[in-house]
Image 1 (cartoon, rainbow, N blue to C red):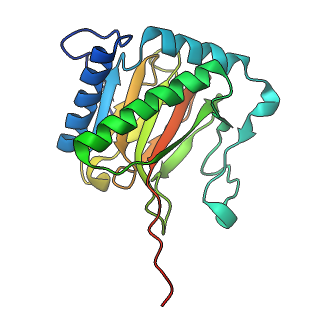
Image 2 (image 1 turned 180 degrees about the horizontal axis):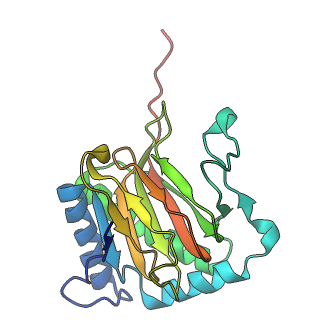
Length: 225
């Protein structure tokens, strides 16, 4: 298995502190989604945003992290044989969380104009994996629902080294092609189609920090006859 190095910054540099640089990144993501159904990127967030998000996850009290569950609504349940991370939802109450949600909303609006995706909401959480934690192969879209359209992951691990584990393993084409392994190094960004990309998190050998988010559409309501 080869760990993939994410794409380098586009022409114009990798500092996304200005609107023009953000637009170059957003266009790069749109093109990659069109061509492959996923985008891997290093330096996808401005350095300042990555730093405050990294600082914020370190400051969140232990009590605010909850064991992650699988499933949706009444089917939600904890299953340590499938998933072992802990999560803390991002509400925008803290400055770092608000900055992240604002950035994601700008991406949402751009992709709606560029790809006509009809995305109208975004949900996101911090995720923390300890040594031995993992997440078995799965889709982000829930069975019987089609409201999660696009998945977004940002990694906050300053000191990740080969051998630390915790790689994101993606299966393009639903698993019909060779898997793509992504190192969870600081500044790496992964964006992919939720309903078309099965993926997993390989077992960690040290702490792994990230943000996961999903762009959604409203489910279609069929009127009763």
